Amino acid sequence: MKKIVFGRKGFNKLSADDKVFFLFVDVMMFAVLLLVVLPMLNVISSSVSDPNAVMQGRVFIFPEGFSLAGYKAVLKDSKILNGYLNAILYTGATSFLGVITTILAAYPLSRKDFVGRNGFMMLFTFTMLFSGGLIPSYLLIRDLGLIDNRLSLILPGLVNTYNIIITRTFFQSNIPDDLLDAARIDGCGNTKFFIKIVIPLSKSILAVIALYFIVANWNAWFKAYLYLNDKSKFPLQLVIKEILFANSMNAADGASAASNEGVKMDALSEVIKYSSIMVSCIPLWCIYPFVQKYFVKGVMIGSIKG
Image (tube, rainbow, N blue to C red):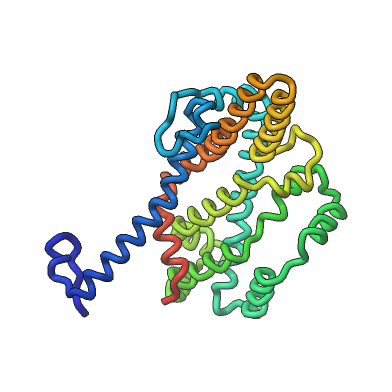
């Protein structure tokens, strides 16, 4: 097998076909990078630009006329802080309990001595392909008495079949049967083996699963829109939706009342959209660096059997 040496010297030693292949890959990766980075830069620049410049479409990558009017308009609303606290509560509770339910389901499914594990796995997989839909889900939440209850945003999201499959594969690949046999010889039972050995050896996949739960639940708003009526229980994303809607209505009313003032309000409403995106994204950007070292390792090991 040919050994590939990275760098200019290694590239010069490659065949013509390999050079074309790697150049093609580099170009494609750069194009994908631009597709990800350019919209992000546009949102960041628009959130700190002059509202009129944003309204006129003059902002692309770099800010045009520095202004924090959008952030001031968003953060001065007292509902934002309450929405942050609710979002942290829902995301934290769902992620913590979701990781627990995931490992409690995945570990038995990874054990060869678990009778009926294939049948349970088929049932879990079936839920990935077929579901009751929106109306049956709402009727279930209603019949459980969870309408306008915070638990309606926590309990339904605790089990994710995709996360269970990844975690199960990780356990199968990294917790050998010999380790269990050695622990049994030393008098270690299943519960103690799981707590003392399996969990400490699974930090990488636990960090990945926690990140999946955090991202999925932090940006969620539709379930809250369906199940919650009390605005004091709204998560951040739904609060931001309400603010954007209110500003759009105010801008429309202002435009009908006075043209100049209406244009200003319309421009501010446009900037608020970008500022709201930034306000909701910053917490995830702060969390990701702490789990990045586990992310690639956990996904790769948990996705490959062998």
